[in-house]
Amino acid sequence: MPDPLILPQIGDIITVRQRTYLVEDVCPSPVPTPATLCKLSCVDDDAQGQNLEVLWEYELDGKIIRAEHWDKLGVRGFDQPDIFAAYLNTLRWNCVTATDPRLFQSPFRAGISLEPYQLEPLRKALLLPRVNLFIADDVGLGKTIESGLIARELLLRKKARDIVVCCPPSMLLQWKEEMESRFGLMFEILDRQYLAKIRQQRGFAVNAWSTHSRFLFSSRLLIDETYTAPLRDWLGELRPGSLLILDEAHHAAPSSGRRYAIDSKITRAMRDLAPRFEHRLFLSATPHNGHSNSFSALLEILDPQRFCRGVKVRRSDLDAVMVRRLKEDIRQAVGGFARRRVVQIDIADLPADSPELRLPELLDQYRQLREQRLLSESKRSRAASALLITGLQQRLLSSIEAFSRTLRVHRATALRQWNMSPTADSAGRSAAPGTEQSTPTSDLTSLEPPAADDDRAELSEEQLWQEEDLLITAATSQSAATPTQPDARACFLRELELLEEMAGIADSARQRPDARMNYLLAWIKQHMCPQLGQPSSSTGPSPWTDLRIIIFTEFDDTKRYIERQLRAAIADDAESDNRIAIFHGPTPPEQRELIKQAFNSDPRHNPLRILIATDAAREGLNL
Image 1 (spheres, helix red, strand yellow):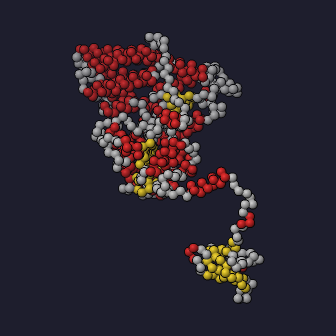
Image 2 (image 1 turned 90 degrees about the vertical axis):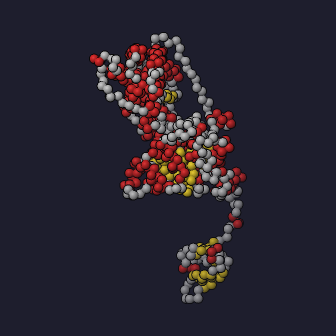
Image 3 (image 1 turned 45 degrees about the horizontal axis):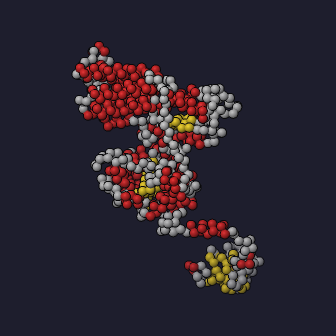
């Protein structure tokens, strides 16, 4: 209630009953009561001039609005010009109109250290009527930050309400963390666990895509109707205000360069889903796979109004929807990136009979013999043989350990093929016809090590070995045509002799450190741990310097070999168990985050010095 000792005067402005009034008259109440009668006139825009009479002392929310205290203005002094300018600019930025594409809001509402070049994708996006943009910046330039700026800007301008980020599974947690910590955007990871939770809470009839406005989605699930069918229902023909962010977008491009290439399952899924989003944002550091038709097909998914598969991409159309900068370009313009130096290290003066030299010679002889023997065979057999030899060469270049295991499987299969041939001694046959597995030649490309986004990347080592062994067996079976002519039989026998010789050399050398491992151990001793191989104390100063290294390898066999050799070399170190970390496909997400934190921490407080990683570390690991 108002203070009864302070009465309004004629001409005062007061608030009462949630409105503002001008006091026109103040007089005693006409009824026998100690209250004061106030005659008021409303000054609010929606009720100007409306009259009201109140008994001031009985009003609950009566308040007198006194003058603006002009006599006190400036008593505290005035702000400095730069402080007042900051305040004025804040007011201006908060009043930015959504129709002006030249003024940005999201950079000032993000917890990032913004680089000027990262504003270019945002500028281009706002110039487009719909955001159909391809960010193809080099690795490490901040494509995630650039896409987050665009997403936040569209939300602020009310151009987007729903966001779906589709990325490789290894990147899901990183995307979630980046969007939350840097832009304040909360995303839900839509996976099997989320579906189970929604069904428990709301029932089976609820579409999980309708339960939130921002989702993270694994690109592997694009071909699973369990997830994409409800997504299509949620999107409809076109969902206004929806934004699709496709990370590693090159996976959605057809792999073939032919004019009418058959789309992959992911390509077909994206052709169906992408047009249902109003805005589309593609991210990839490698947008072009070398085939112009495949590239135009990918751009057609992004913007079908500008591009068409099979039609040459015009530079003028591409400039409007693509942002492509390399680190070298940014370094020359603004600096800030260390120059990467790739140095080839030559290991010379090896003995002629060393396994590193002898095995490549024998493998090349083996290749020539097989090519000569299969000249008259089918194209399919020759292709399978070429893939098999390439796989053996890759493993030998990786390590003798990887080569030895693969060679053992190939040799056993070749021996069975010989024993089953009608020209072999029947007493020595060890397998019956029909026991070999048949695999299409196109599937033999799986002999390549699994990439980070490959379904095989998360298999355990035992499962991956089993799959590789089956593929090697199938490739050998397809390419080991039964020799019938005397020359072919002699050639096949010579092949078996070479396999036997290579297997003997590899088995005897696989457990020993090779020349490259000896060089690596010497380098570590020189630059990282001068006391390598000597016992150290857990209480004394660390014998290790602050330098950290990453060792990349394609094959898990080589990874295991490197780890075994390094752990044997540092076995006397008091912190030997914590000096080495392994990052590969089966590493769970929680462990990946711990490895990243340990590797990025102060070396004085964390003993980790060596990280051995497979291709799984190519994506989703910020070091």
